[in-house]
Length: 180
Image 1 (tube, rainbow, N blue to C red):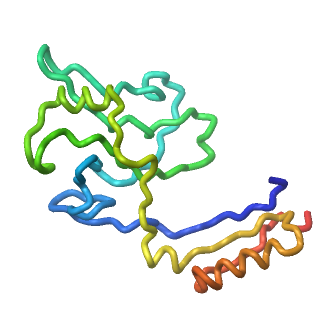
Image 2 (tube, rainbow, N blue to C red):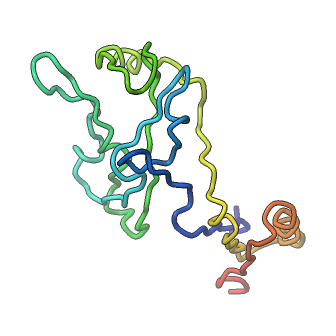
């Protein structure tokens, strides 16, 4: 509020990126499947947002009919598009999906797409409400913190104290708007 916050800048890539066979992923193999969920990514673990006003792209359908007997789940369009009004952001998104795990032994087992669709429709719990990705150590050490231009007395000291405890290599910068 009142421009008293901070902006945290990290170099790319922000997160660790792993090579799983021929695929690049935000996760190591052992993280992909748990008792309750599977973590899925397709293609690159990050993508540039595409800015459009096409309503079909802004609200894509994730379940599509392939033929008379098979429906496919397509996550590719989710989170990829934003309205053109946001184009100034030049946003890059790290993407992955977490889905409830069907009753199979591991990710390489075949499973019925209908079973997965049903568990998603029934909103079966994943066992968590959010998923934390660890920031890559190299990126964390190169962190820049830009202070809001309207800090109150003591605000900068709070940031300095946090950094001295958690990230002494980070740089603190003043906003170009300070005093203006």
